[in-house]
Image (tube, rainbow, N blue to C red):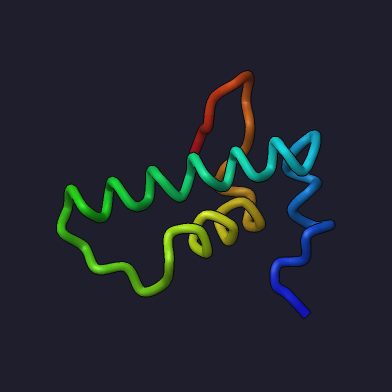
Length: 67
């Protein structure tokens, strides 16, 4: 079984498309921040982004990502 489950993640977005866009934007933010601060990531940025979404740290708010 995958964690977090897709049906749990879908609660954070109106559609799967919105969820994918949210995850991609958050992953890009994580990657850029790690590169700028010269931090080596323990996991891939996409996995970290999905975990952030599942934990409610990132939500969609009117065409923008908020932390």
